[in-house]
Length: 380
Image (tube, rainbow, N blue to C red; front, side, top):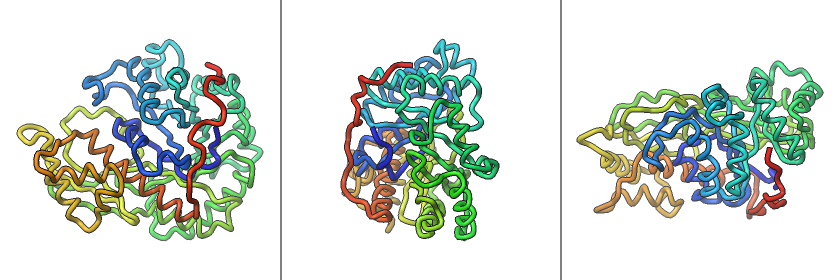
């Protein structure tokens, strides 16, 4: 398996709709997509099972769901939010180990995400993975403060070695988190200086820059459509245009159509809404609550506003767009909050992959299957 062809790493929250979008988005099977999931704590309503899962069920369902939607293609998994006594007691071992092995047992492939803030028990779980499969990748996530604090490549190399890995099989994710930068040029020059120190050319398996400008609290009233600039994309375009300042141009990462927080289970009826990306903006088309008497039919006027707007890409653009367009038909099925998230994420991933292929002048597909059969993987 190679991660060196990936252009896009969406950092997702393991929502059912997001996961299903991996299997349907246009270009998702091209080998250019390398998803990363941060597993939320248990306690949320599972739309597939139609109930709240126990901590053990929550962790163990990972492998089957991943395999069904993504097959043998690689993903990275961050178990930091389930790195606690409750989930460890349910699994009787570290949750990260359980997640990775559940994926492998289902014929899927998941590799760990680790950070400088990972707990000692989390690091030990990563080391068990690397000791069993030394040539397989890990992902190291660095925050802006990490980037500023690390003084040399040698210091970062030593950190990676403590995980039982080496730079050549480590994907480096520089994660800026939530950023709203109207003039990216000065910031890009600062980032380039840190890249020159920490990411010399031809050292890491792959390097990504991640951030998002998706709003934390849109504060929209029902029936109102909100427009929010995709300044995260403009920032990345500035990185590419100033690529000569970087040892090598990093690839792109974002949080899809989410703000990077709010992982607690939601226990109120969802509001009917559609999130939608254009080349330059994030849009939120907001409707009424789905509580009685509205029900899921509250999505119909929302879809009508989106489809009739100048921003809709058309039903042929992706399966998610086709579903949104179908909501205008007589007798259409409403779907539910998970379906609406799938449609929005399907469109977003399709759009980002297209934008990246144009920006980097990349066309065509890479190998669809891992270079080494998964049966050769050793369980931890």
